[in-house]
Amino acid sequence: MIELAVNARGVGKTFPTKDGDVVALTEVELTVEAGEFVSLIGPSGCGKSTLLRLIADLDPASTGTLEIFGKPASQARVDQDYGIAFQQAGLLPWRTVAGNIALPLELHGMAKPARAARVAELAELVGLTEFVDRYPDQLSGGMQQRVAIARALAEQPRLLLMDEPFGALDEMTREYLQGELTRIAAETGAAVVFVTHSIPEAVFLSDRVVVMSPRPGRITEILSTGLDDIRDEALRESPEYFERVTAVREALHGIPVERANER
Ligand SMILES: Nc1ncnc2c1ncn2[C@@H]1O[C@H](COP(=O)(O)OP(=O)(O)OP(=O)(O)O)[C@@H](O)[C@H]1O
Image (cartoon, rainbow, N blue to C red; front, top):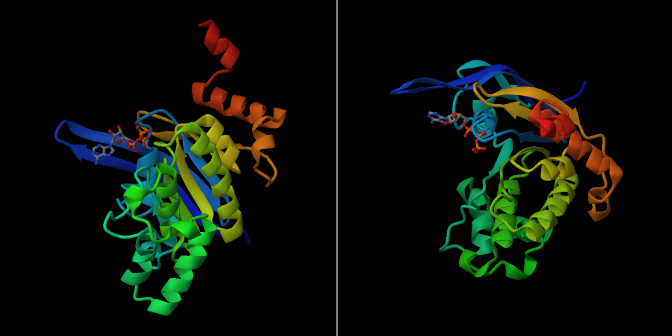
């Protein structure tokens, strides 16, 4: 039987506000298989971050059921089944790269020698071995984001939740880190749920792209990219890649792009 990293059934989220209820998400049906890379894409306010926050148990769902590796999200949180990385790297400025990566290991009481070994392994995984003694303000934005990814992976989570982690980076760094992330996901075997505004980014990274629409946020389409496992620079220039980018763009617009331009 296929193991599911995420299993969302009829999930909805309503925020009560002083001006009335905001229905952020409704009737979300989504499964993510172990080891699968799934992106969430959609216009601003469609509930991408909300869905990620529900999966991470940072907020409770208002309706439906949500299981992470067959457990309630709250249990998965206790069991540290997932790691999280956000748009802002969120590093502690007074700690070195090694200190930041080690933080979750320290909090959970890993002994010092084991911790040092794991930090070295993670620094190598994200290509920062030579920078472990630097402080965050001595790093580029892309390097800071790599530290955040290493920290999220510290406890070998089987699921990585990422909310626009490359959103604040320049295009070249972004493309470089996309390649790195696909390699890291393959090496660790972790499933990834990745929030993005970028259609090419979603296609390049993903096995499946989940297209969402706002008011109230819901899934309108799920597209399999059907691309093979090798995600390199050649892929970005291939006809299959352009085809998938067009398909996702059309799904976002709800109609074929040519016709949308005619209106
Ligand atoms: N704590 C909250 N209280 C009230 N409304 C909220 C709260 N959090 C989110 N919302 C609303 O829920 C909807 C979905 O927000 P969410 O941040 O999930 O969208 P998003 O797709 O991630 O947007 P963006 O792409 O701009 O980051 C929005 O209308 C937002 O205003």
